[in-house]
Length: 601
Image 1: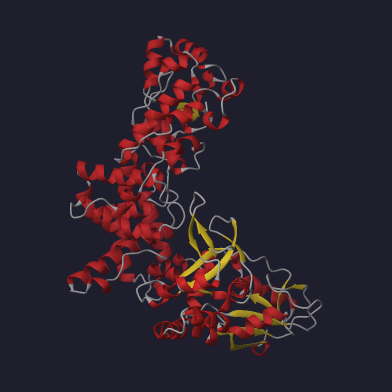
Image 2: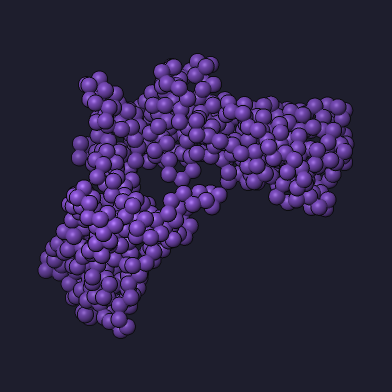
C-alpha cells in the first residue's frame, strides 16, 4: 500500500447514517454479526451526546478489481439490487448501534450483559441530562419495546407508552435525535407553550441534541485499487478480538507514557502476592476487578480531601468505580493505593475462610470481593475486632442472601465502601446494603443449583455450623474442601423421591440437599433413608444413635428420615435453614408459607 492508497477526513454522522440507510455503505460478507449489548450502546450514545470521540471508521471504496460479497448493515433496508459505494471494515458495531438507536423507527433488537435477547428503545432523561452531577450514561435509558417497565411480579411501575406520557416524564426518544421537529411540536402543545418548558427544551437542545447534529466522524478510506491481501491484513489488524479495548488495556497504554508497565505490575506484584494455596478463592479476580477496588480507594481519598478543603456537599466528588472513574485514575493514585488493595484482597480471602467459603466453585459472588477488599484496605486494623468482624459478616450475608450483587453493581460498590467502613468505626448506622436485603422464605424452594449465590451461601452456613460427615463424623476441614471430596447431595435420594411421587421441584431444592463426601453418597445411593441409615451405621462400625447425631449437625431431624416422612422432614429442615439465614443476616424472617409448602409435598 502506498501513501495514496488511503485518505483521512471527517464526515457528518447524519451523512454516514444516511449512507447506511440507502445502502451506499454496507458490510463485506466476512464481517461478523452485530453483537453489542445495550449497555455498550448506551455508553456510545453518551459519548456522542457530549461530543466525545468514539474512534474512527475505516471503509473500502468499492468498484475496484477486488470484489467482496456484501450485505446491508443490520436494520437497514436499501432498495433491492443497490450496489454499495463503500464497505465498512472497521466501525461496524458503532455504526450499527447508532443507526438502530437514532435512525430507525422500530425497537432496537439487541442483548443484555448475559447475552439474552432483548428489544427496546433508547431515551434521554432530559432532567438528568440537565443535572450536571449525573453521569451522561445514567441519563440514557433503555426501555422495553412496549415502553412499560414492570417489576419482577409483573406489576407496572413506569409507563411511557404514549407521547403524552413521554412529555409528562420529560423522556426524549432518541429515535428523533436527528429530526426532533415532530416530537418537540407535540411537547410544546402538551405543555401549552409554557415559557419555562420551552426554555428547558432549548437548553436541552443546546446541551444534548446539537452534538448529534454537528458530530463529525473521522473516516479512513482505502482506495478501490487496494489489493485483496492488503484489505485482509488491515481487517485482521483492526478487528483482532472483535471487542473494544478494556479499561486495563487503556490504562496500560496511558501509564506507559510515564514508563510504568501496568501489565507487568499486575502479573508480578499483584497476582504473585496471592499465588499461595490459601488464597485460592482469589484465583478468578481479574485485572479489572483489581482496578475497580483501587479506584474505589482513590475516589474515596479525593472526596475526603475535598471535605477537608471545605468543598460544599453538593460539589463533593463521588466515590465510584465505573469505567469513567477508572479511566480517570492517575498513576500516582494507582501506585499509592495498589499495595493497600493487594493486602485488602488477602484479608478478604482470610475473612471468607472464616465463613467457610474456600473455593471459587462455592463463592456466592465474585463481584462482592471488589468492595470487600476495598473495605478491608481502608478499615485496616479497625476491621479486625470481633465486633467489626460480626458487622462485616452481616453485611456480607445480606449481600448474598439478598442477592444484591448480580448484574450492574458499581453503584452498590460506591455505597458499600463509605457505608461499611463508617459502620465498622461506629460513625454511621446500618449500610444501605444491609437495609435493602430481603430473603423470602419461598426462595428456599427454588434454590436447586449452585448457579445461585444464595444456594452457595447456605452451603457455607452448613459447613460453618459444624456439619459432620454422616459416616465418619469428621468435620469438613479445609484440606477436605480443597481436595473437592465434599459436595452437595440429596438427603432423600432423587430416585426414591421420584418413586414416591414427591414434587421434583421441592425434592431437588436446597432444603433436601446437604454437603457430604462422595463415599457417603455412594452408600446412600437411591435407597430410602430408613434403609441407608442402617447401612451407614454398619459401614461406620458405630451405633445408629451416633449416626443420628452426625445427621443433626446438618440441621436435619433423623427421626423423620427413619420414618421416611418426607413432609415432616421438609418442613422442619426449611424452618431450620431459615433460622440460619435469619441469624446470618441479622433479620427476622417469618415463614408464612410453611403450611402452603407442606401441602405441596
